[in-house]
Each structure stands twice: as C-alpha cells, then as structure tokens.
Image (cartoon, rainbow, N blue to C red; front, side, top):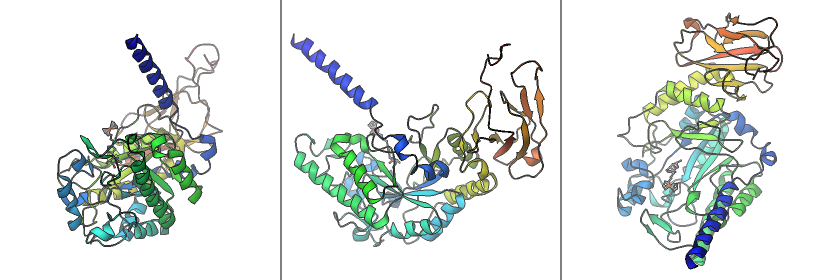
Length: 449
Ligand code: H79
C-alpha cells in the first residue's frame, strides 16, 4: 500500500512538474509586440564577456565552480585586473562598424564580481581591482552615442555571496527550503544590484543567466520582471527568467527547428570560449559566422556574437578582424538582413532566405563560388527584377517546366556570374510583382494539389 501511494505521489509530481515545464513561457507575445520591434529588426548584437577571468585566461566563473582552480586562486585575478587598455569608445566604434545594433555587456558573471561600483557588497572592480573605475558607464554612453542599444548581462547566480546557496559543483551552503530568511537576504541583495543597474544605466535589454538554479517562485521572477518594467516599460528581458522573459536564447547550439518563443537569439562564441583564453585559437571563419548569422535571420532570429576582451581590456586581433569582416559584408549585403522578416518555408530554396516586410522582395543567401544556377520552386509571382546586392547589373533567369494549362508554377533557375559573387555569401534580390505567393501543393493535375 505504502509503495502504491509513493508511486502515485511520483506520478502526480511528474504530472505537475511537466505541466509547470510546459507552462514555462508566461508572457503574452501580443502584449510585447511593440517594444520587441527594434529587437526583431536588429538581427545582430555583440556579446561582451569581460571580467577577472580574462587575467589568467580561464573559464568565466565555471573554472572555480568546477574545481579546475581553487576559489582563492581565482579571486587572486582581482589583483591583476588593470583594464588599462580598455577603450570603450574604440570598442563601441568597432561594434558599430560590425553592423550590430545592440551590445550586451557582462555587468556581473556567476563569480559575483560587479563591473560597477555597487554599494551592495564589496566585490566589484572599482573597490577590489587596479582598474578602480566603473567599466559600464563609459561603454554604455559610447554605444548610445552611436545609436547602438545597450544591454546588461546579469547573473542571477552569485557563487561568491555568503547568502547564495550554490558554490562549488559538489558543495552548497544551504537549502532554500530550510533557510528561507537567508534566501530572502540574498534576494534583497540581488534586487538591490538590479535597482542600481536600472537607475544608473537604464538598460535597453536585460540578459539574465543562471535561472536554472532556482524556480520562478524562488527567484520571485514575476516581481523581478515587473520591477524592471516599472523602471523602463520598453526594456526587453531575455528568456532566462524561468518563463518571465520575452525571447528565447539558444546557446552555442544552432536550432534546427524554430525555437518556441516568437522572438529568439542565438548566442555564440567566435572561438570556443566566452571570455578571453589565449590557448583557444579555434576561431570560426568569417564564412562560417556569416552563414550562421544569415541562417539565424532566415529562421526569424538574431545572432548575439561574443567577444572576450583580454585582462587589460584590449580586444584580441582575431576578434577585431572578425567584426570588421562582418561589418564589410553587412555594409554591402545588409539590405537582405536588417529590417527583414524570416524567409520562405523550407522546400522552396535549399538555403537561407529572408523577405522584405511587405513581402514583395525575396532575398536568397548563396555561398561563394556557386557554379550551378540557383533554384527556386513554387513561386507563383511574376518577376520584376533579379539582382545581386552590391552589383548594378540585373541577372538573367530562366523558368523551366511551366505547363500552360497547369496552375503549378515553373522552376526558377538563376545563374550567378562569378564576377558578381561575394567572397563569402552573395545575396540575390528577387523583386516580385505583388506580395510573395507560393505554391505549396504536390504537383497534381488539379489546381493546388
Ligand atoms: O556566460 C556564458 C556562460 O558562462 C553561461 N552562459 C553564457 C552566456 C553558461 N555556461 N553554461 N551555461 C550557461 C549552461 C550551463 C548549463 C549547465 Fe546545467 C549547468 C549544465 C550543468 C549545469 C542545465 C542546468 C543543465 C543542467 C543543469
């Protein structure tokens, strides 16, 4: 009997938990549509992971949490954090040049080291490092002066704080359920820091991290959301607030099917690490980054591409180069990316595509050195013009297999002369007569079958 009861309990618990997990996304997309528009149009953001972990060049926070280094040795990096080559104006200029429309700076990672002079607790770079200054204000000012939106990454987890339960991977200070007063103290501290950031920097976007360590109820997530919106009703909150954020944030892994939220953003490193690590030379190529970027946009998402400044604040040359290559590509091809919407459903073109907002133009992304003509299937519209971005010469094209008595459109073949191809990815602009109208049928004799 006892066994049966405990089994029943388990089943009930699982059902409740699954229900909870399925109810994760608790924000109504219709209510946030307006404030999300700049984010939907922005497509590219730059993530900046800057912190004391860049002094030794080790994993941000996780290195001590996972016991690759002792906590005291990790914190010893405070002494070496000079930021004497940290140049927010140059950094903001580089971000602007990349074509990015927003940047997200780590204000505090899981290690608890704040990059501003927080009055909550002593652990910040102003009080504890030779940098001795607020690293956020000059960057946010420089970004905004260039029309780039300013985002704040904030770790809900603070493994350094005595009132936070978690510490090392196999040791925790206490259980929330057994010491609610201690947890309440932590939440007061955390909310104090959020108030400071909101008042001093008024972020356009909040990028929370680490929500997985506690439930929405424990974090008091609805209250956190409400508070931030009361400071700035238009601020955007990422999806790591246990269901109380505005958009989804797949990390490192490219989504093969569309994420659940209406808005989403892939955050990804240029090499294999978020912060600066000198031994990590596994840099993605500009072609790889641009193809990932255009693929994300084609799926209706953004790319938040990460850079990791060195301990002194300078940007590794490979990352500078990547942002410049991306910028040059965007300058020539940005029309097909920024302010567009997700492309054609799969099956019409084997590659990434986007649409103009009025859906009278289709943009196709074609990898360099394509010798075979590009193929588009099921396009019912007649074509006004086809061109390659960056070139004035219109492309010729051929419609193959159009049967006069059938409603099924022919196949559109577009050869792309090599002389007009981009060195990474060309953007083919197809201007249509009228709004995009696609045939989705099975090629049957009867109309639309
Ligand atoms: O700041 C960067 C990383 O340090 C941080 N987010 C980016 C932007 C990050 N690192 N890892 N993660 C986020 C995800 C970690 C997931 C895990 Fe787990 C935590 C794996 C094991 C513990 C999720 C939660 C899976 C099991 C529990």
